[in-house]
Amino acid sequence: MKNFEISVLDLAPVKQEKSIHDTFQDSLSLANYTENLDYKRFWLAEHHNMESIASSATSVLIGFIANGTKKIRVGSGGIMLPNHSSLVIAEQFGTLESLFPGRIDLGLGRAPGTDGLTAQALGRNPAIINQQFPRQILELQKYFSKENRDALVRAIPGEGLDIPLYILGSSTDSAFLAAELGLPYAFAGHFAPEQMEMAFNIYKEHFEPSKYLDQPYIIACVNGVAAETSEEAHKISTTLFQAFINIIRNDRKPFAPPVDDMDEIWSSMEKTMVLQKLKYTLIGDQKEIEEKLKSFQEKFNVDELMINSHIYDHQKRLESYHIFRNAKNSIFKA
Image 1: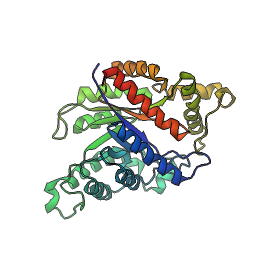
Image 2: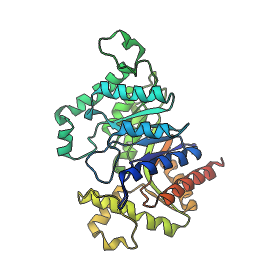
Image 3: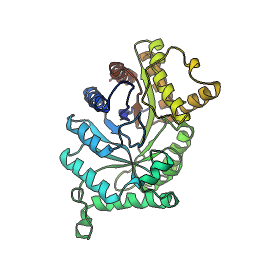
Image 4: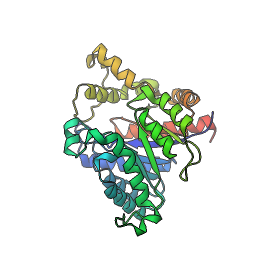
């Protein structure tokens, strides 16, 4: 079993009875805390038209987090590229990399990060997404290249900067693309676990070395809820369960505090659907987390595990990330 890095995915979750200002302050607090625990990177994800998630202006929020930290890498997990002009994203991330040299990542996805009506408001054309997304990635690479200085359209800031690109996926489609382009690949196992194993196999089997990467690099994103006791971990994980019920019910309200009995909230069908979507969620005390981390890594052999943690109480959320760090260190005797 090879060693692996651990990182953070933050959706800037909005909680009931809390403001969006509170959300952003909690995100910065989490970034500072995990930076001190030597987490590798802190990514924010683009979503729209959701009361429960405040990371819609992802580039702006990345700047806020990077400005309040010192060494942790900060980036997007991801920017939903067909929602934007390639040039604008090149300029935004060129600005971020110029402000915070050597610390900015650009993770890219093709999904809208929202519902169909909002996707239309974002100006997406679903008929051309499968052609548009790969083309836009190549456009970004061109805008970031030194060779583009003689072009009529240039990204300033952005041109000549080393901003690593990551391909994000929640199905097997992006695995083929990441492999073809020779770019690192991150899979959204925190909400789409069904195809994760197949996607990783496709990526590794079809990977073509590039000037960016000489061998496959795999990031798996999973939900993680750790606490001092197993009982507490399962209790506070009910915030995560409720969030997924809200997705099923198309209810976008802010995240709810934990409850004592989920059976009072979900139906048997909803329970089955939620647990299927949370197949690789890691819940427990430190000993349980150690065992689950070992089992996960023996199965997937990833280079990096990115943890998304929907915990209502901010202090308990910080403690959860601390337990994950201790569990990982214990496994590899760091």
